[in-house]
Length: 209
Image 1 (cartoon, one colour):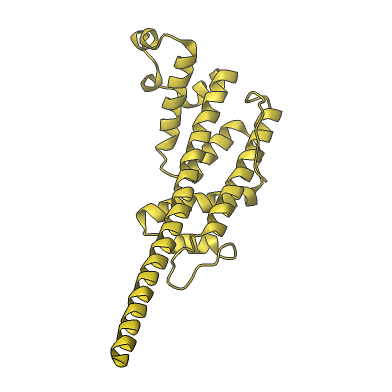
Image 2: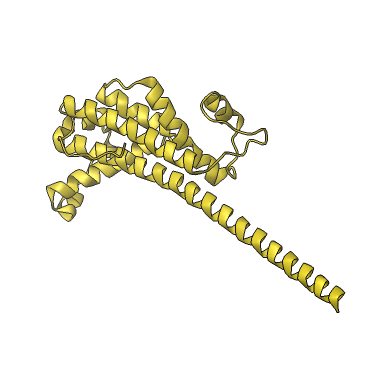
């Protein structure tokens, strides 16, 4: 009977250990998914930030941007469309969305940002820009490459991120918080330059330090 009690105890302990391992696995996976989603959402928020900048340009002084990117008949609004939209603010929003989609056709965050910076002619610290773009690129690797770094990303990340030999990205709190910090730093510099050059309306922006 004593031996039976020992075997039952061992079985019970083994089952507890297995369940504990499953729980730890679920917790680890869930935590990673949260940080992956944070980086994916960060990319979405940055894209919206760029689109909102274009709308700001249109509100502040629309003609320079229209002349630069809307120089052919494919980028005009016909009378019927203007009447159907009806409101000047909504017309501005419609044009901003159209221009953003035109820029977005580059299918590259770097090229999209470069177009905005080229148009505004503002100077942004290259290290700040590169650091932010590096983290924004992680979104593509999460969605399309199973969170694995490709050779191009490994080259860009050299000396900035520690990536194991298996090229699995260390997606954790440190990475997601660093991503948010670097992208916010880029946005802060862009905002500062645009406000100083009267290209956007000055507004209250609160950044987390």
